[in-house]
Image 1 (spheres, rainbow, N blue to C red):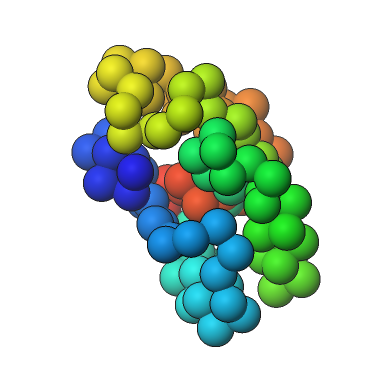
Image 2: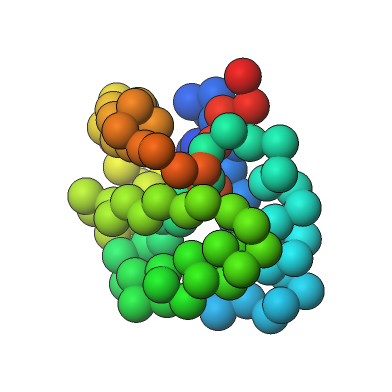
Length: 103
């Protein structure tokens, strides 16, 4: 999914598993600091873990928005649909997010 996000010109951070340890969350947080927006967007079959990830990132000072994918997996979406999804999410967000632009 991170590669599919990068192909559209955004920064994507991929994590293995739905409940990463604190060390991984800290690393994500430090890498995400320069991003203007931070969105948590997990595959649909892992959506129950979004609140936990949001809370962990919020405790590290991030404003986090959640966006539910219209399909099960971002990378399997058609490229035009991916781009539309990210464009709409970034235009309607007031927070920061894991799919974020640095410019």
